[in-house]
Length: 315
Image (cartoon, rainbow, N blue to C red; front, side, top):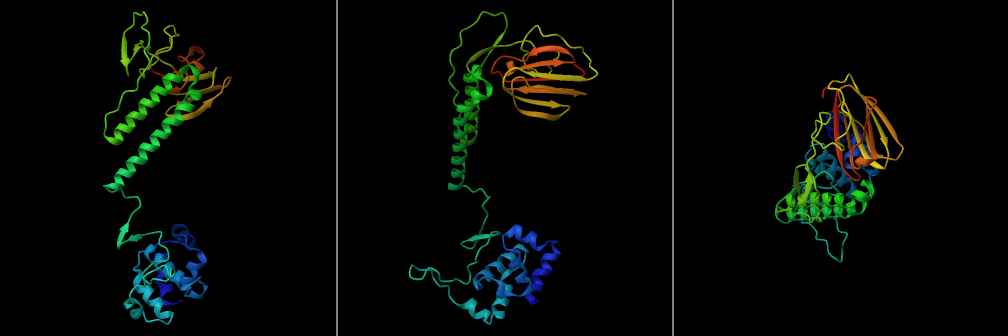
């Protein structure tokens, strides 16, 4: 083992790394790394590869690569000082493959541009910031177009218009946050006013009724039907049963752990037991028939309606 190989191996072992670990980080084959550490430079593809591998390996280990490159030049029978003093040969169309001594073969760890380290993850101002903003806006628009096609399939035909409008409104808010502009409210179709003694509130230009919630709904989400059977104020446990009547997305959380999240199909039946709390979120409330401790609470809401409900042992 020559001096270069001894320095490389000692630095690697001090970091507690194997040759395979180094290969995974800097993408240099293990046999080439072993050749550098053993001084068998003839096993390397070309002198250009040898210098590039040596430079990258040294930088990865936190070593200054130049003394090692000078030593390698001496080992190869060259005078390192003469090599360093030679002017760089320009690459021209007549000789596009001319080698430059100061140019690394490949450096995946630290890429240098005009002598300054370039970090691909850094976010600069100027054109870089504008480019990032354009990319984000483009992604948001793409998501909106995809949602316009697939959200109706997910939430059911009945809630197609409302689902698309709600998602489009959310997209506009994200765009406004990115661009610093004011989000434009999504136009909504006029809803005929119905005779009702209940209070109403305007949500995004649409009048919606305010329905009183029961003590079994501490989360503040409106209960689907006013005639739902009441549960006892205190429960020893919560035995939750869900009968899926229509295809819908459902997420169930039992005692703080998500036990199911996905698309449930018609005729599916799910049962869980919670000691403290059970929570159900669905994108098509009419498709979920809920039973708590053998008390049938019925469907959670209307078709295409997103609904969230929580039951606790102490209501």
